[in-house]
Image (tube, rainbow, N blue to C red; front, side):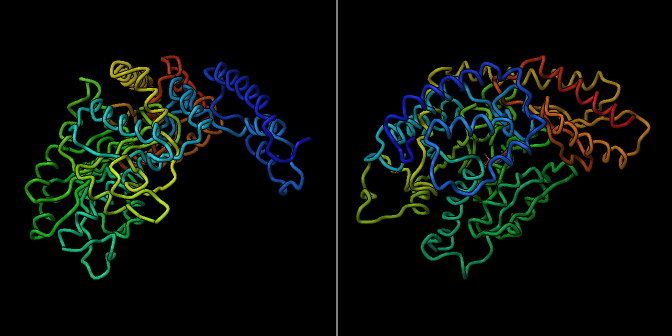
Length: 474
Ligand SMILES: *Cc1c(COP(=O)(O)O)cnc(C)c1O
């Protein structure tokens, strides 16, 4: 038995992987999202570091054989929790090949195809979303890091307005950075502001109601009060409870009028631009200075993948470039993504993105988006028709916000019932959807971004919520 890596292991590893991957994907539509024995499966792995290894095939057999029961079928058709995309066949295949090639997409010299395809897909995405062709960008690990990159560029711009190179000198001695947004802002923005040294408390939310809808007049009053000092505006294109949008044109107008930076978080909402049915929601995003969008959500490429776009690429270089004698000259015109984002060595995520866009094109993605819009509309109809379900919001996009409400209970009792029902639904595992608080009420908010979900999966979600709800009440 081999205990150090050996070329002879590869054939059996690849055979095992291909066979098991095929069997898993074949059965994925039927698979429970979560199995009952998660905890037991996990305990298998609580062992000391082995002194002597098992060899590759045995390790993989153990990982798969003992571990599979503790995974969540996130790429299957019934994972409606958070905003979880599937993986298209083209993206999956390309991502596996990216692992085979093991290319760090840091710079041209070490991954010419990786960094070239990254440029190509960023351009393709500006075409897909009908954004200005001169936007620059970078692939990130997700929308959190895309927010970090976009707001990092905003911070560099803000420093310049104060005559300071923030990447060089830091923020000390400067006033606080004003960051203004609505109540729709995603929690990851606060995380990005924390990481950037701007601070979570710099964020001021202007909401006119409990759903978080923007109070534009209050926001403009606060801009005016800054008396010409530079500020950052964040527009939210697709919030996570009901899929609503800030009025982006209006925010772009304010950004123009007050010379503010406009950042748009369109992690999944940017895909509204792909369908004429929803494009108006996302109008005005082309006027942003920086834009966030996710890859592993509605683009259906594997975890992890997101995109940050900026109008002025110099601000990225200013923030993220670094140099050392053994590294490429930063002035080399060939792509150096390690100098445009937080990571230096980076997985070649462009392989999967390129393959999926090449395989399905604009039409394929419009079909995917409209398929998910149809599913959300179908769920809304079923909720409306069910006597024990109550829809809590309009469905502008792909999220349906509702609660179980059998009648005769006050809001506090309904909150307790729906919170228990939320736990029960995850525990049951046939379908997966979490709860949130919307307008103060505990509610479900299933989100549809997968190509795999079918109408029957929606039927199942409704019947299981009602079944478990009735059990809990009884
Ligand atoms: C999911 C999401 C994020 C965070 O994205 P990650 O890819 O998980 O980092 C940020 N903003 C919005 C609106 C989101 O939906």
